[in-house]
Length: 243
Image 1 (cartoon, rainbow, N blue to C red):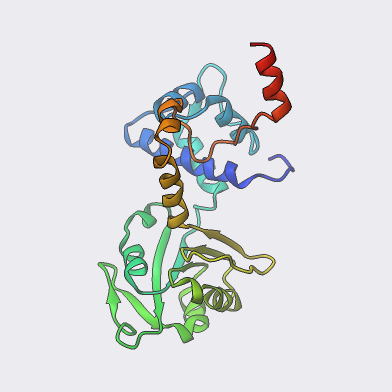
Image 2: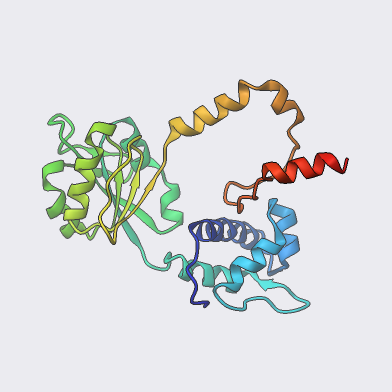
């Protein structure tokens, strides 16, 4: 593995590659080239080869990648060969929906606890897995007893920082945040924020400019593709002079 720092975009794409390989494995495909992988799943073959090269040499010239072997490597690289136990703070609509989502188990994540400050919710069990709703004041104890290593924040923005502080005080170092708030994060703690409102507003911007949308080139750009550098004003000027 190369010693240089791996970008988060790269690790995000590894998750995409793993998902694609899972699909191929389920279809009984034994080997696949980077080009075939790219063609089938609207990816970039050169990017695939570059990303995988950070972690070793996996392909065989003239054959491609062995699907099962590469799946195992990516699973280990992403730390998915170890089960992760998840605690969700906030047992409202979003928190309970996340607790009910069965797809987490496919990636070795299990929701084992919900937390809330609503006395009517505390003590109840949620979903088919019957996940217990605990008093949010008991986060530290439950995290320790249940072996929770991933926290999810599903509370209003005004409560998010307090909840993050509780999670980090309990020893949690990986947090998925759904609250629309900028959080102060301790050193050694990783927080990923999913802001649905920002995504919707970005779509609104697109819809508000139908003429721009009409001339936008259709493509299969992936959300984890490396951003392309925009042309500077001098470059644009030179381009006009030569056309």
